[in-house]
Image (cartoon, rainbow, N blue to C red; front, side, top):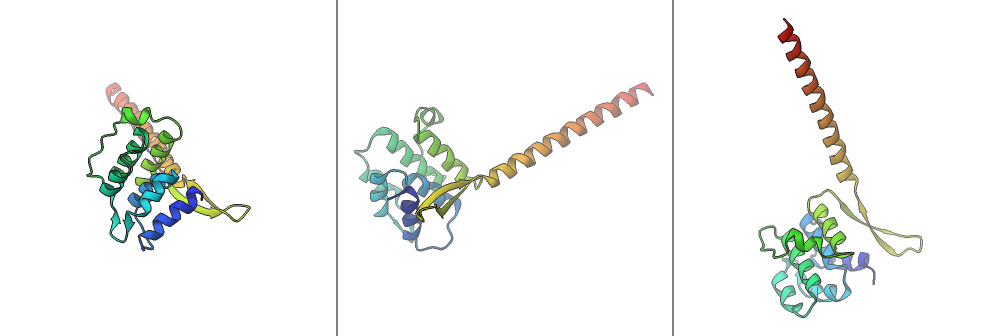
Length: 163
């Protein structure tokens, strides 16, 4: 089963049509690994995601997987304690570090998870970065405006000093 199909299954287990970005970020991380997905399926329902039970059930998993679960929990429930530090994230390596970074952008609504059929009509997961690109364009325009205002203020100040 593909990550796209696992992701869709997790979202369907909530019984909700609309999910906020915290669900999407958590499901993006929980759907990557087949074994983690199988455990997560038993702990997702209409009430949400039972991360305490997932963490209990994954005690035997490797440290990287447990850090990813901890991060998924924190992105889902922002006030949950997260033992994984930025340093830990930097040491996750490929593919986990990339997954975590993508999940952070998903949680911030800067990237959207998109599930579409590929050429073989199988579900394929892609990430839509348009919201993030829009934020970058706005930031760039604001910097240009700020530079123009600064230059104008300096020119006005120079002119006033000459007078």
